[in-house]
Length: 88
Image (cartoon, rainbow, N blue to C red; front, side, top):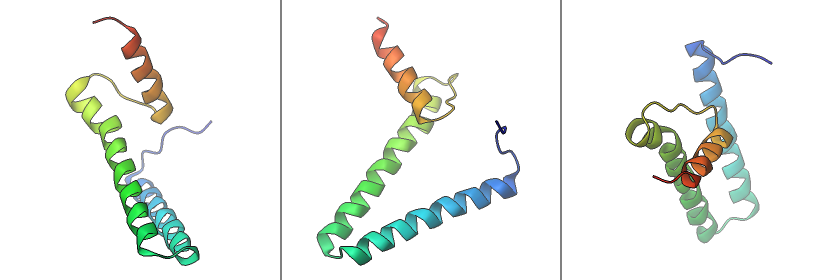
């Protein structure tokens, strides 16, 4: 397996490619099924997923459990399920 990407230039390229993928998928979806309700629901879904991602990786790490770092969303889910099972 390859290690983590640490080169800032490559990280910006990766981020730009992810943005491009999202924009292209959204544009294709709206091209195939355009109406205002689809556009509003798509924008709402994207906003909601962005907020959930922010919660999982920023809020948890900075406000709830500052010592915890996640490898990805699956690691976050495992951590969250484990936390709920332990009594406080």
